[in-house]
Length: 368
Image 1 (spheres, one colour):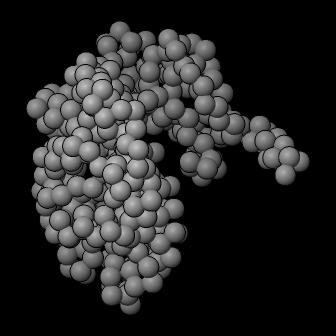
Image 2 (cartoon, rainbow, N blue to C red; image 1 turned 90 degrees about the horizontal axis):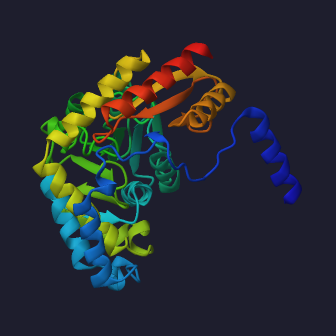
């Protein structure tokens, strides 16, 4: 095993695919997912501290044993108010929420139709569900229609992201929802990059007028715009009841820490009450894209194609040395040859830091 591990490490090193989990203090942050700056908001921190004092450091058990607290209940209510959905079920992460809902809805009788660019957690869920599946080209509604029209299974789920994490483009939710209504399918939308961003922060599904639609369900992470941790599935009361009884990542996983739940609930209340946060973030996203010479994407994430994984890693390292933290998309996150720098706009990114960081990115990309 050690020989194999060493050989794999050498391959990653040679191909520029080495990833390191290490602190990055003192850098201008264009890398994190804290889109609205709520992870450091005093109100969010106070909510977390209160729950920590009241409930302790952890949830102690699965939510179906004794892990559900009033913090989890209030979080689900706050998420419903924010998104306009009827019911919510909170999981320990966005990843487990996606795994849980897909596997609970899947099986031989459910066709999964998914955009080729959906997140790894959704793809893993489809594989684990043992469902027949069709991958359609990115943003290809004709491909969705063909897959649904040709299905032989009694049920179908169409899986999209509202805003995609690599290209930053928005899904055609209105067209997809109409197709699902026509072919009696469920539309499952991952709003990881939509909540707190699109529709004055209420999400792209709400902005499209689809909140509460019986054939539309939403998954969300609480670790991006809401600045905390955890994930959720939102939809009908019937869907929530089904997941609470069948989703393995809900039943067999220790519940989200109450402090994280309380923090996310407070963040959801802030987003709903202060739509200017999302507006400021989007304004900064446009400024960042323009300064770096790239077309502005739909959400917080702006990406710059740089070709090889080696070049992407070199540019990211050079920018880090210059005091700017950026994301770096390389295989397996993206296919070979389309590696990217990932730049994240934030509502609390000051004008001076934004200008300095964007200028460093523009110079690095132009000189490389």
